[in-house]
Image (cartoon, rainbow over all chains, first blue to last red; front, side):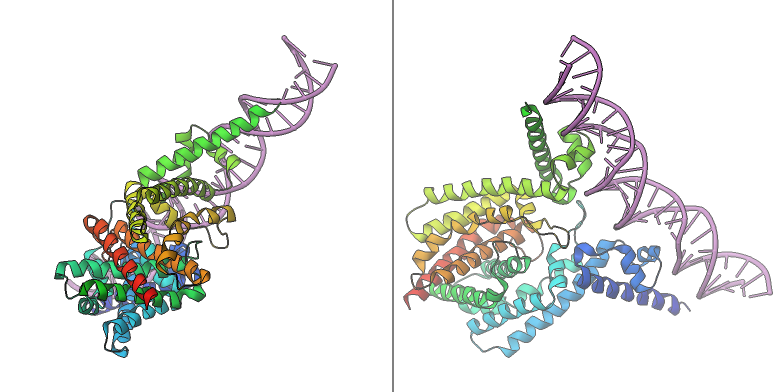
Length: 204
Length: 204
DNA sequence: AGACTAAAATGAACGTTGTTCAAAAAAATT
DNA sequence: AATTTTTTTGAACAACGTTCATTTTAGTCT
């Protein structure tokens, strides 16, 4: 039997992913080093490449985990929110910001990680991003009954990206970003404005 | 006299900045290499460090140029737009997206560049980002006469960040981004929604 | 103009990356 | 127990940013 082989390999992979996650949390995505990860996982440097194509693919594995947890956080937020689309969208946006703040380095690596030119993200991982817009779509649809389904898909992505942009620039700490202590109220104000505008345009 | 000394140094610096800009345009920020830049500028590898602290500082010099050109593009867009705040904000957002598309790698390096942990962006360069929000503020103020000046400053940054987020995720080509061929119309729809919402909230 | 001094340009060399691969260790099979 | 197959290992490699002793150039002084 060769159950030991697969099991050990799977366990090593898990250990490496967890080590990479811990390293990103401690030193950020830019501070992720192959030697530090393998030392933390308790294996040789070369072993990394028996379990994963690349260091980049290890990052993608970490991002996959993060995306999954972010997804459950968002779906939970919807169930706890009120019934109106305004309340649901407010809850989603605030939960998104809360998650980003609470898991800053992991959340940042979702959007800062780049593959070398030519390579691109595997499809299975691209699909995992879908949850970010899927949780938004039904509530936006209630606000905009005038829109076709295709238009709604686009507008949902736009809405996500708008909220995302505010959180991203704020966490980045760049000059143009909203200060961290104003982030929650600004996110709330943005969603209020967006929902008010959407309802009004749909009615006209 | 030592006018030749300073002049040569200044000219070398200019050549290096231009070379770095060209390299970023061709290979992206991640593809910027000290050896390629110095080869392109026609000087030795070590000469780079007589003119600039770091390769990072060379990127900041390039970003400074880009920010300046982006600033003039945005101010020009306002003068060409109609008189209503809605028209001004539409013109600004669309011009921002156009600039990002037309100068993709340079625009991306404005937001993708990171300094090593501990170091942070020099103040003079932080200040250069101000133009991004300064062009927005007066038009948003007309839509929200109910807001205090401090609240307006925050909301201006939020508004910029929202539009920026949509452009950024679209150009990134990640799953959640708006497809490039829908970007212009989605930006327009977002600004329409934001301005409609703002006007309604101010009136209430 | 030529000798001398100060400054700047140079590129070989260093430390640190990610990645590879011949050799060693471990596991499976006979 | 011996043999074959597979996996793990870490020294070695190429590519990177950065440094610094040396060389070259520019400025100054008889």
